[in-house]
Amino acid sequence: MDTNNANGMDGYVPYEGLKLPNEMQRYLINFKDPDIFAHRITEPGSFQAPAGRERGMYDDDPKGFNDKFFYIQALYRKGLDRMLVEELGLYKYDKEIGAQSVHFAPEDITGWFEKLPRRYFWPSFSMMNLDYIFLRNNMHVERLEGEDLLVFEEAYEAQATEVSGEMWEVIERTWKQVIEVYPGEEDREAWYSGPFPSDDDPPSNALVLLVWFGSSFAPDEIGEDGLELDEPFNEYASGRQKVIDKIIPRMEKEISKKTSLPVKIYTYA
Image (cartoon, rainbow, N blue to C red; front, side, top):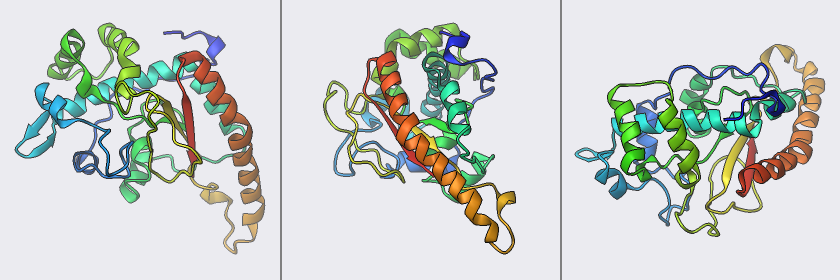
């Protein structure tokens, strides 16, 4: 991984520990909630039960992906999140977004997930340790095979919470296949549902990120009579629009060049 300061990593603190899904999150995945998956409800295109069953990641009684799947997925996500932050300079972009008077009000993302589980589903999983930028792609770890899968199976059995050198090697070599919606169909459009409007859907192999602005402004900026709302809101709206009009198009272009993949960045607040 490239960890030099040319990618704006000075001051970045990696996430420690491992974020595992709670019961509600597992339910939304296992029952294929249409707000979660990157496909239309009438089409296949997300986590595949047959592949999971073959790898011991999917149970038939009760039906659903099991502890092994969610643990391996969390380890893979942690490694991929860290790799993308460091190699793509996401920490630098995150600081640039934060400098535009865009307030990140909810500090406890988990608490917000409990209030609005679908809206904050993907931010609640993030181990990028950033304020505004999150990965939206699904982690299709049920596609891992052979020695690649064995590396993560051994980590699961040991209940490891840190990404080993062997895991880094697997992630760096397989991540583009793991995030793809329709394997082998790079030109096929993938529909990402959620509270972010878009005029076009990204292709199946796109790297998809979210820029989340959090709440419109911090609670201590709102006056009791509401008269103090105008200035903070106008400042917030102006900063957010600059991010949407200027920063995100540049991010998409620069990240696409680095990854040789199509890049789509959604925004929501």
